[in-house]
Length: 320
Image (cartoon, rainbow, N blue to C red; front, side, top):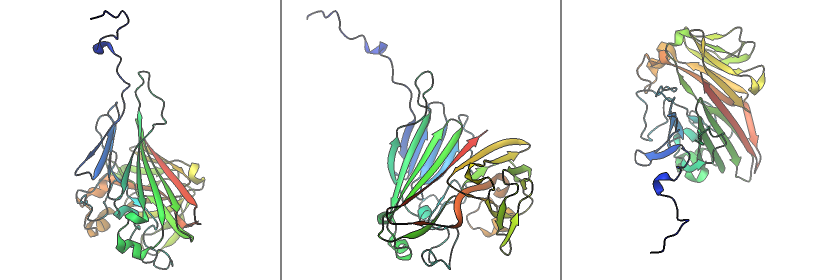
């Protein structure tokens, strides 16, 4: 055999590739999860493209999911981050969405996993990629016939979930693929995990007008931080617009900072005792002590999409 002076070095000395996020599909192809090289993780259920879990590098869960949540696709998930589209709540008097059930079609439809996108983050010193972006898609063709009969419009949704070391971003692009205009509302129904709701304050809403949905609908103005000593169900329109951060403070320390892009409204919700007891899949019944919903959206009024138009909105949750 001819001795080659420039033969390749031994494989053992070949430099390894930079570490990347590991993406896996599990539970009979119904869930997609990703883990960063540093240990942070996210898990998404294809039913509703619902984010079920977001953990830091030490395995601490940031989202609250009811112990009674149905994860088999039989109904919308109680907890995590459900995607609300094209209606928030119900709108019986709205000519287009009036027949739809609570929160529309997105959270009760089976989405397609489109794959892992190229990260836009800056690698660390070792070249490791410390961000991962998962893309999901839903179109009218993938929606159950019974739902399409109630809302017969052609649309396309691209939902992206981006995990970074200290933050989670969810973004939605909604496109009108029909030949006629339609109205939409969009919201991320985020359930954040806390230690004790009585010790929580929500900052960044001072001076903002809100719609109080506990009891008769009334419009009020917030003064000081939002605190919790009973049921809270309010739709705020922060005075500073989407650029105003909303922070969740517990025991005097910032726990989460919620940043919004093109989403003018923020719903704050905690069911407290009586409402939690009335919700069949809310468990345990005292679980309201451990959660607060901070829900960025565009829900005060409607976004009208002309044929070919698109609406895009996003939230970033920074964990402290």
